[in-house]
Every structure is written in structure tokens, then in C-alpha cells.
Length: 297
Ligand SMILES: C[S@@+](CC[C@H](N)C(=O)[O-])C[C@H]1O[C@@H](n2cnc3c(N)ncnc32)[C@H](O)[C@@H]1O
Image (cartoon, protein in one colour):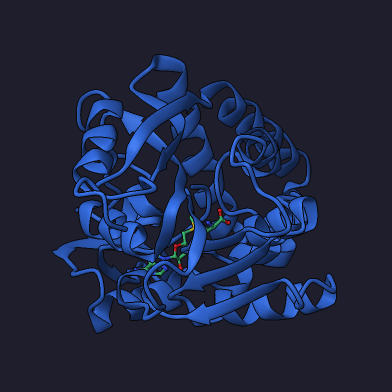
């Protein structure tokens, strides 16, 4: 993920020597789903961050790989106009609109941030895609769709906020039709990685490739595959950093120096981890079996 985004920690502003320092996340843990957590998300996703991303032309993607990654990954999902995708943690709807526009599928996005939800509705209307793309303002873990509603469940660089991914995968399994697909883009690590950028991002929890796969299987998924999208992520981040740096004056005038430096630091840190191999970027795809083990559905 790439923008000053949701925390698992308390967000506080520090004042020192009359100068406001950038936002920091205190060391206190925060339960996903708690009021504190959603308040912190409301604070993290804001106009300034979005202005900055708009100036650097992120095409409404908050995730690292943005449009290039979605093009590559989207091709692998087998989407058609008969598909109905659930995009869990859909941000301002960039990935949802991309999939609907490209494949003619229906997409339902779910996001906890009220700002992101409002922006997603407006931008979808402006793009005349509101007949295909809908949004629900909710926590991803407490949505109440009927079982077997969707053909695909997708997550774009957001599920790292869940310290335990298994309940999310289990919920996706329940919501998918038999034979349906779960797919997500995310970073992966060999050994635990703690980012300095968590000061802006909040706590993120990356797993190893093997652990993502094991958790998907434990939730009941089969045919688990992953694609290495690190090169795409590096290209997307480098391009974005180039635009950020060359448009610095516009970004600072519109969104403030704090947002500019936060974004620069986040992208630089991801890029160095990808170059050093301490993080890789991956796209996972797995299927819900057509029939359960006992032969019923
Ligand atoms: C880095 S952004 C990615 C957004 C989108 N997938 C994209 O690629 O543009 C992470 C998103 O996760 C959302 N989010 C975080 N925790 C959530 C939760 N518990 N339920 C629903 N959305 C959540 C945030 O509001 C934010 O929009």
C-alpha cells in the first residue's frame, strides 16, 4: 500500500517548539473493529493525502502496484460480465472501477473509511459506472451479505492491516459461490519486517508466501497459486516517486510538506525492501472447491 493509511495504533499529533511535527502512531495497540481503529482510519484517509495522490496520477489506486499491477493481475482472474466481485477494503474505488470498466463485471466495494466511501461513490458516479459498481460503508469483517453471493473476492494491498488473516479468508470462503475465486495483492516477507513508515501507515502485518498459502488452505481454498509482482511494484513506485519529486511544489502547495515527505518516505522504504529482497510483492489466487469434501455443496 502506498498512502498515509489506517493504523492499528493510536494516532496523535505532537507539538514541539511551536512547530507541528508530522503525525505519529503511538505504541498502543488497537483492535481491528474497535471505535478507536475506525476513528484513526477516518483521520488517516483525508483530502490532503488524496490531493497528493491525484497530482501524482495514481489513477485512484492506493496500492503500490496501481494500474500496471491490476492490469497484470486482472487478466488472471477470469472475469466476465457475469462475474460479481467483492472488493474488501476498496479505498476510493480505483480497483473496483478498473475491473468493472475492463471486464464489464459487477463490483461491490466495502471500506471502513467514510471519506473513502463518499469519494468512491462520487468518482464512480462521475465515471458513469454506478450501474456496475456499488459501495458499502462497513468493516470488512462484519459485512452481512448472504452466503455464496460472489464469484470473486478481491483485496488490493489492504489485508495487511489484519493481524490475523484467517477470519478474513474464512469470511471470503463463505461469501463465494462454489468454484469462486479469492485473489489479493500484498507484500510478503521472509522474516518479520517492521517499517519505519508504520509511523504514517499504522501497523502492518506481512506473512511469508508459505504462510499466506497455508492460511488459504486452512480456510478451505484449493489450487492456491501466487505470482511474483515485485518488478511491477518497483516500477510503479519508481514512476510515482519520480512524479512526486518533479511535482513537489504543486504537491506541497496543495497538500502540505508533511504529506509530501510522508509519501516519499513510505515509497522509498518499500522500494529499498523490494530491492534488498526483505519484502517481495505477490498476487495470490485460490479457488473455493465446487463441492465440499463430503460431496454436498
Ligand atoms: C492501502 S488502502 C487500499 C485501498 C484499495 N484496495 C486500493 O488499492 O486502492 C487500504 C484500505 O483499507 C481500508 N480498511 C482498513 N481496515 C479496514 C477494515 N477493517 N474494514 C474495511 N476497510 C478497511 C482503508 O479504509 C483503506 O481504504
